[in-house]
Structures are given as C-alpha cells and as structure tokens.
Image (cartoon, rainbow, N blue to C red; front, side, top):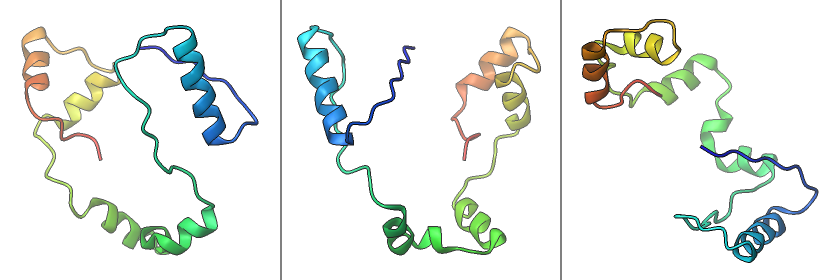
Length: 106
C-alpha cells in the first residue's frame, strides 16, 4: 500500500486537476481513475440537508446507525482480537475466520 500526503492551499478541484496532470506527465500508471464527483459542502448546509446529522439524542443516533446491521458472526470477537494482533490463532482457525463473510465492521 502506498500513502503520500501533501497539505495544500489549493481548492479541491485544483488539487485533483494538478494531481491528475502530474501523474500523466510522469507517466505514472494506475489501475483506477479519479471520480470524486462533488465531495465538498459547507457543514451548515450538510446539517440542513442530512437528517441523520440532526439527531441530537445519542441513543436515537446509535439506533439509526445500527438498526440495519446483521447479527455478528460467532467468531466476531476472535476476529477482532486477531486483527488487532492481540491473539494469534492456529493457521487452520485463522483460515476458517477468513473464509466467511466480513460482517464484523459497522
């Protein structure tokens, strides 16, 4: 995985345009294309448009975020502990954990 971060005072559109140009100029091949669409908005506008951001009650917010989640797999806690490096299960158990669907994340 490659991670390169640069801070800039450029607008979002200008930064993306410059990045695309520089990658092309350097003939840097990538297997993806930029398709950011519209990704910025004033926070005040988001609060007005997004009813989920208007939930003041913590319990109601948690219910809203989690109400559509499927039940966690039986090995959920073991998978989390393994991913955090806190346990190291035998290879056969680790393989079994990896073969199921990824239902551990919210």
